[in-house]
Image (cartoon, rainbow, N blue to C red):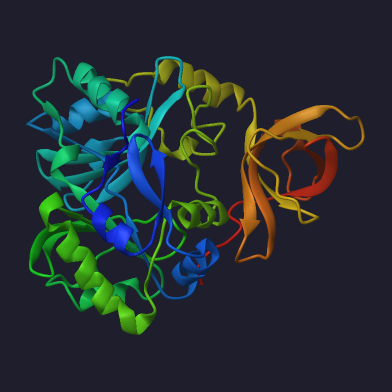
Length: 367
């Protein structure tokens, strides 16, 4: 059995007393102490995350944009230099292979960021789909470490250690500069529902960047944050997670993300015929929020039941107590005719029928 791969910051996490888990083949910090305290730090001040397990795939060349237009559901060729878009790569049948963030770094250079568990599938798929285009696809994941600072104080913390004008960096934008004297790419995207930044740097420089951010963040109450609170933060923000809300059996239309699909592309794209059918016929199920009435949390895989008939009408994809709301929340897929906000349902929690209500997503939006 292969041991999980440590990130370039593993020794720092150990020194901070982190608990670790094997996540997509990486040894990742789950929490450093209290995951609720880490969650609340991101909501009120800032949290510092190691995301070096994510995959980075570079696509370059005169037809890099066209190749990506064909490979993905969106239109990367329309992204402005220094900007980013959320997108997906789908199979021929429309099932989601992965959800991605695509950055356009230069006229002929893109950076595609994939989930750690899917890099080994996404990179070869992009290579195959770029055949016939004047473009080169290269898995550059080993060349990048990734650190994120998220929360209301993140801009102020970064401003103390970078030569970039943080305040002028727009949401879903990226720029090259330095952090703590280290050359980086600085992006403003985030996966927590708060303002936040991602810092791409060489693995050998990751420790210096982390330590500089830790020092600059101390007056603001910055805390290191692990995977556990990242999950509760994204759940509150209604952001889907691959392997839960997104998978090969789901299309963007079930996930409520049909807006990221562009059908009017000259070369078409892989999966376009199947996705056009799903667009026209409507989704087979709808992603909704669930607010539990009691204290027991709905968990992934729990059945959702119609209280009137006892029929199973859906399934929970993610669930957890919400530190911000103070009660259990979940995301779930339900039948379209039972997806309206305010609909009362039961969740089968280990054989016990628990009351819950369908609500609109997200559960939380930053002020």
